[in-house]
Length: 498
Image (cartoon, rainbow, N blue to C red; front, side, top):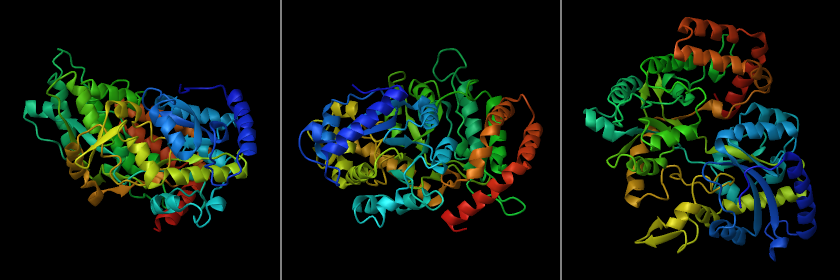
């Protein structure tokens, strides 16, 4: 059975014991020793869980072990609690052999790297001659933009450029004779009409229009750098674009489009609400379109979920492109060098065409079948392979892996590809998904809680926008942020050449 949690002390003890056992039993530097299960390399991993806990004794997971000759001991942590768990693990120092981190700019992670808690992997990877799949099948941009102070500390969780799109209940729009919105302002007008129409027919105004998502600052120019008077770079929270986004959300809240609990609502909660027919609009990976529509049809048989590639704002669009990865895998210094090499060989293997296809589709005849050259997932495949399955791996790049759904008919996937393709023409990479500042990591946590509170108060109308802007001006003027502005500017230039 899959584990959800394990006491830190026990994890540490077991990790040491397993390291001793594995290192004494395995002499193959390729990390794929043959033989019985006791001879296989065991890797202890902590990773995020977006579904029900997987059965690690299922055909999928045992099949992966047979193909890689590696036994995965995974501590699955529910996604809503994952960042908190990562923070706790980093604070305790009892770090699993591979730590999955979804936010590579997480202050606790950067602090741990600065303290030398993780291996600098450049010395192992070298020119990648020992790891051809990691070199050839992972986007060059991922290796370039994931660097911290010019060095590689994490293995990128490979992702395509198109990673998100807007989902809207098209059947509700059709019922009201409304066109699909194309701009941020049109979205607010459209959603106001939808939520006021009681689309679920329960006689209550309880439909949610949208959730808070700070990626929408891109539509207000938030993807472009904003420099300080002396040439530094303001972090995203202190940018004019971010403030303008807050003002947009203030209007949305005043129009009754947001949940009163939006500030504490988790993505998984909102996903469930959308699928249950309680929400009208949702920003998510395009591959969720079919699943969300099918879920909504259980409540309203005529439900139709339409993809909008992006919305246009006053200074940009909502098309934010991935830098080639989403999160990364980190190996702590507690892992011996010999085992680090074996772990890297394992991930070089998962980035191969063969293993990536297996992790995506499983076993033919069990998890999928091929009809007229089209892969169709079986019921068992739909159960055992999902968006949790890919979390702890480095995979070969598939430009449509966040668009194609393994449970959707091929014609749906092909149609969705065409719908989101325009993102590639207008989209930009969010620099703050990759640039870092050690000074910011040290200073910002002192103000983050207060900032979040002020942002929420501005959105719900408890304080005026003038008060919020005055607060941001005060933060901008903090002397302790000066070094961080400089570091952000230097890191931005180093990574983006501007």
